[in-house]
Image 1 (cartoon, rainbow, N blue to C red):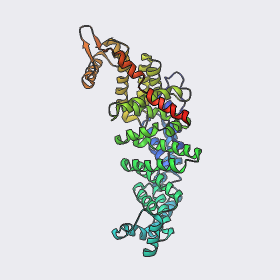
Image 2 (cartoon, rainbow, N blue to C red):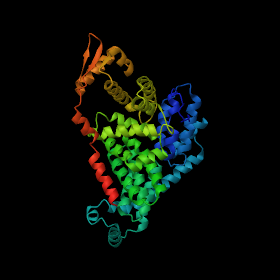
Image 3 (cartoon, rainbow, N blue to C red):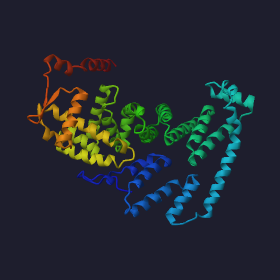
Image 4 (cartoon, rainbow, N blue to C red):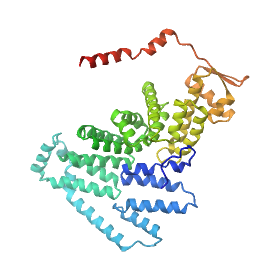
Length: 442
């Protein structure tokens, strides 16, 4: 795998910013596989050594699963064989026997949970439910636990939809809190891998509630579980539009943003892209602006720990106010996004939103801007820059106009009254005074 340590000059090839090695320890092996597939799909024909390296990584990743046929094919491809060794056929047969065994062990309880007369008698009290099922239908704890084991086996075979259903049935009945927690994580993995994003978000919130409530007295376990959840959440974050704002709220929650800064600063790339591309679609502009300010602050704090062209773009534009460097880093950032499994589909959106940021920042400090100069800042030719600015003025009702004769954009900066400035500067004073008064009273 490529190094994940960015070069200090900021001009390293996109491959040097590959985060697979950083992400992998916090993902389930089934989730790592599509990342490897993505990297393999981007290789050139002459990169045979790299292709073999990724193939070996796929085999090492999946050989402990029960996806026996696929693992056998990987082994043959790796070793140049036409037929897999006999051991793979034996493993395949054993897996089939296990599936049949669990199918029989769970047949009765599965049939019961599909009957309306049984389901209608179930309540929120799991102990009472088990008593009812034991008394009326001879259901045992072993039958319930068999649902969990069967779900695990189906997951290992890559049958994610079947695994999800089994784990759901187990969770409805089981009183084993630890296993119920594992089942919730398992269902989250199943829904992510099945790309059932709405269900995945429901499971993600259940996992989050469990972390906050059950691990409140175990700071280390809470940190580890939050780190894992942040990494798993990248899948819905960049594949399901309705997940964007709830997950940004989650990431900026004090416990989770501290986790990112302390344990996984590379997540700043994804958080920055999510915030910047959310500019035009956020329901609450005030929340989006606060998130952008938070990103700028965190990028500055963590610059010693993690940098890539995405975070350096924010640093150059919003901290150093270096427009030339910001444009340079934006070019590099686009290359990095197009090489990132999660961000490829959002590269164009990010570049467009980043240009809006550059334009806004540049306009704040200039009343008259040369179109030629502005096109260079935006990384566009003169004609494209002119069209882009015209569309921006029309769509956002920006108080500006283009002077075609002079080749400039003229900004109208209405002066703010002294009263408005006083209001802005003292806006939070009353609330802070109340907080201080309450603190002193204690």
